[in-house]
Image (cartoon, rainbow, N blue to C red):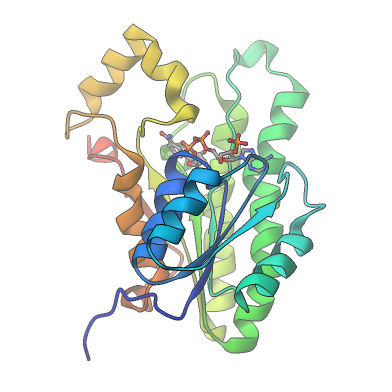
Length: 251
Ligand code: NAP
């Protein structure tokens, strides 16, 4: 049997795809043959154009994912536009930085709600159709802070560690129902999320010194792993958190 990375005939939903890692994943899924719906709070015009340029269908769903209020509507609109959701990529996420001793409840709740609570309930809503069809792929965007504590980002470390946990919990329950659930832990990728870090000369130098590959990652560096985890080539892979980090965790 030939190994297949082909996503022809599949429908994908990617959250937070107007920019950065989400945009790169949405476009790569379309290049691999999937129709793609993107859900987020900002206008994803460039992403929609890039998907359309591949010849695949693109659907835009406006939703603020800082609460679970829009979750069922997002799935309903994706199904209305594409017929189904075979692949869900939970990418939308935020980070808040502050010293531990003054870290606010607002910064705690905002990160936990967007990065973990919405990820779980959107997965739950998408999984219902996947289970009916006995076929589906959920790819969560985790972080190196799924494994490490980080500096001045306690709610982000807690949420991303939680992403590792729910990835495995969902994988266990959905595996017998034909649905694989995995996560990608990106290393240091140059996006809006990390602009403050790369602008800080000291932190930028410290980060680069530790990356064996010797450079920041690009959003496209994450896309290949996402296509793999969305494709039949990964049908026997579930409950994993795959680091795509230029070797950071190997040090
Ligand atoms: P980014 O450019 O800031 O992208 C984050 C995306 O999430 C944007 O599309 C953003 O939309 C969306 N988003 C945030 N809050 C939202 C909300 N309430 N409702 C809807 N959409 C929302 O950063 P990125 O680096 O590509 O991050 C993508 C994912 O990778 C995140 O989960 C992040 O934690 C993770 N990650 C990034 C790195 C890295 O080094 N860059 C490393 C590990 C993990 P707006 O444009 O409207 O804010």
